[in-house]
Image 1 (cartoon, rainbow, N blue to C red):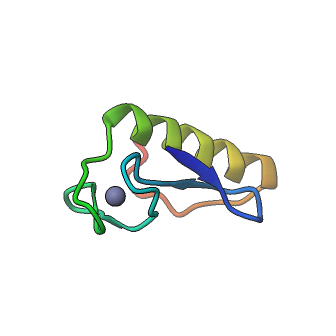
Image 2: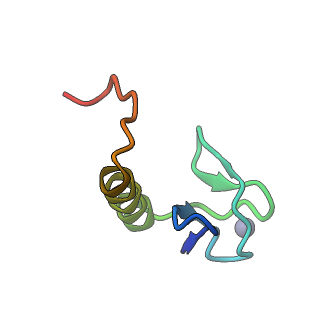
Image 3: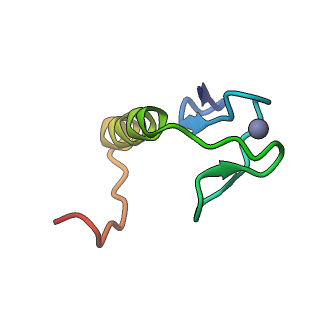
Length: 65
Ligand SMILES: [Zn+2]
């Protein structure tokens, strides 16, 4: 699931337990171990990209080809 923090930025959250801490290497929840779905990851990427663009935030992204 995708939350909004008080600043309006999207945050990725676990579907199972609602926590927001993930192992970035395996994309699984630290609390319960549930995997984060590809769809959620894609939506989160879209939302954070839009959030940054709307606010004029430039992210250092060397992986953008
Ligand atoms: Zn969890």
